[in-house]
Length: 173
Image 1 (spheres, rainbow, N blue to C red):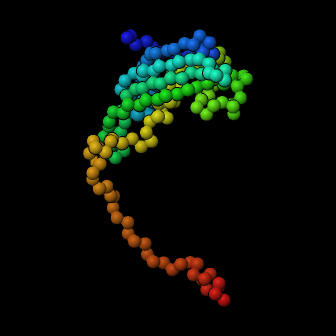
Image 2 (cartoon, rainbow, N blue to C red):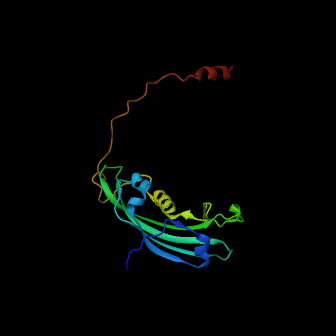
Image 3 (tube, helix red, strand yellow):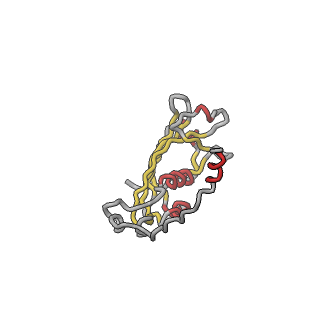
């Protein structure tokens, strides 16, 4: 199957009315913030999107995407490959949309003056949020996993008199 580039700007209302599905790629060099959040993005982003209208009459975009990024292990400082996968469901904020009444499973998305949103920006945000907070190799492959990691000893604190001991004496009177 041929890899087709996904469009940058998408009109979700028009796509939902036509029940469009997109399957394609986003070139890795287009997602600059993801590249800055990692050591590097190794593969293009492969994404699948479906537009439709749910039972409540809300326009929705649901899909998934994946890519391979290079991260730095915070335990041993060596790089490793990490497969980053995301799944999402969005609904656009239209003039008649009440945010408090949206289902919890849906994320809201703001549209520009033309009724479109930037798909690359949305995918990039989702990938950044899906990155591990503290990236580390799995324990079985990390060179530092079995080693004891200590960085010095803490000297015992001097025994100082309790500053509140005077108050204890007043309490007994």
